[in-house]
Image (cartoon, rainbow, N blue to C red; front, top):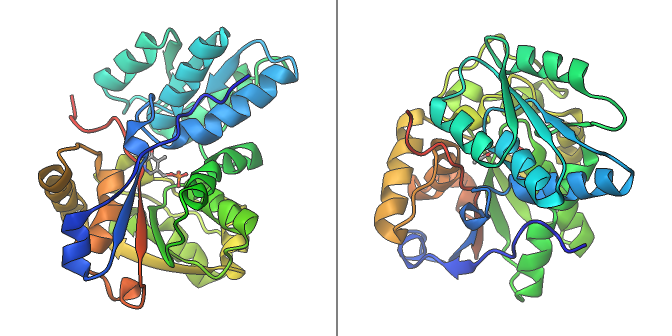
Length: 297
Ligand SMILES: *Cc1c(COP(=O)(O)O)cnc(C)c1O
């Protein structure tokens, strides 16, 4: 069975290269059929479970993860139930239903939706976690494989961090290539800085609340594995404001004629704002993680 994600374009951003004075490459995960990089890891996990005999999937995400599970279920011909919190937008629910998944609204926030989703899961109908699963990380790592196959070896990579699944996938991919010395900028918005809090504490901590327009980054706690892995890699934590993330979305739309959600704008903002943590790099790659939450209705 072939993989469910596509090999995404890798293009240079002339605008960002000019701004930073060195080549900046874009890995265009916004062009994945489900709208974000999530399809890499979730596709990998779903295919693995189907090979083990799974006959359905449960998801607990009203965002890009839920949409990716729904997409994979339709492609693999198995039913999907997505439990979304009350905060999920009408558009998000519509997009999930367009992938032929059923939507259950439960709980004020992701935590409650996730707990309910756990009660629906079984051996034959696994819950696909949005970020904390080695199968996901192995799938996300394919992004780095594609960069290597393209003959590119940037010395700094930039990605946004929610629960840390994407970052953990990137670190997994760097290990696969033997690129442990590559620096990674892990970008969060100020209102959802659970990775920075974990780095400072030396272990994952649960934030009492999150408040950010980049709702795909609003995980109160990152996965344990990424905090552990950050110790043996050159990972630098960067925070941007919501306003900077939004402004980066706008500048990116102007520069590249593509719309991405604020969670992706956060990663782009680290470059548009020319943060000091990126100053020593000779060449940069930014994961344009994408996201369907562009228009909020
Ligand atoms: C999920 C998501 C993130 C954050 O990924 P994590 O694996 O939770 O760290 C960032 N951007 C977009 C568009 C996402 O969908």
